[in-house]
Length: 125
Image 1 (tube, rainbow, N blue to C red):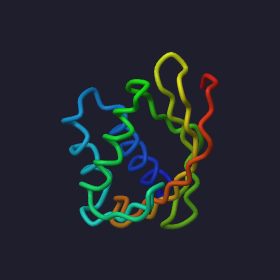
Image 2: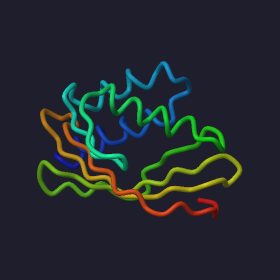
Image 3: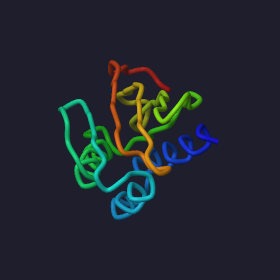
């Protein structure tokens, strides 16, 4: 059951990166994250859905054009922590970023996200 809950929250979080319009990003994040979420990203620690929203919008506005974020592994969720791998690819096989996120769940929502981004790779996903 925990794995299913984690997978649902994670997939909703990832869907914010792929929303059809920027205006849907906050709505999707609100469905996946607690309001006091702690986000450990490439630029350090930030708090709140607004901070995560800024990060997501920055990724969505990649100079190579809007890209696609996908979960590319199963969700491993032994307890209240879960981890998964992801890939972000820009249009026409542009820059690709891959990584692993570790998330903590509280009341079926993500209250901490730790992003471990890998190297950018120019090959196609």
